[in-house]
Length: 312
Image 1 (cartoon, rainbow, N blue to C red):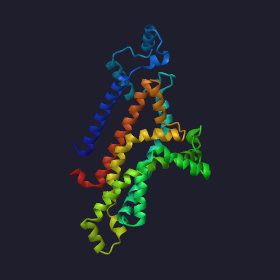
Image 2: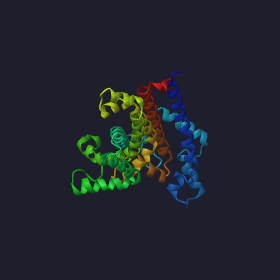
Image 3: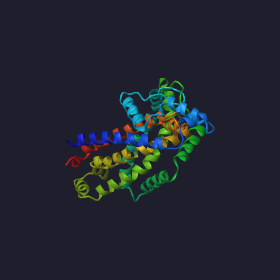
Image 4: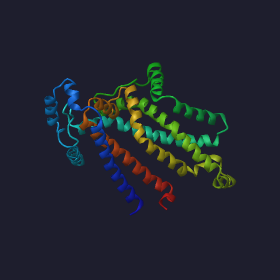
């Protein structure tokens, strides 16, 4: 079995184990939808009747098998709170969260790769020191503070972009959607860049001190041209760290969605956990876990092409 096949099998096994973990953890948490709906003063008979209506009276293995079987068919069930199909709710929220995470990650990778190389070449100049200080600032300042500052400048002071919200008609108003996502994307990308720049700078510094860089300089190339030959070596670790950050991005997205009042997947997940909507929570987490494994699989595939030594 080749490297791609091994990673595919490992990803599928990881997704399966994750479903078991998520399902088990949600059953261990105190309280359930029956208690949340009827209150702590409900009689045992009323609680038992409501649990039977929701299928929570069956054994845990039976519930898991039934849920996984339906999920493999694309049926995520219905919300225990409002009865709406979970699949439609997740798709509607992904219209906000998916472009937020994807575009911010791509922007962070591009900017951090370019900036890391610049900082490595000008590490002793004022511009290099400023870029390093800026990355340190991104690590130290909480995400919501960055978002509030951007709102204060671009929405309140200059009135260039909306302070928050999302169009009711969604992507049927593409201009309004793009305007509403600019500040959240920049906020999320700035947080990621603060971490990624350090890895891009470290990888660039390693190349600058190598014989390959000195040979390129001796051949008459400028420092920028010589370092440009190491784009793949710099990009590979940045992509790897980005893939590892995908799971943490959901947590950060919850903060960003709250600051900018966006109806995204993260804010929905927090609300559903509070409501003990087990069906919706476990299906949402399944989609998130699958997305994380897909991103890591794609990044590993790209890295194998950027650095063929990984295939050896």
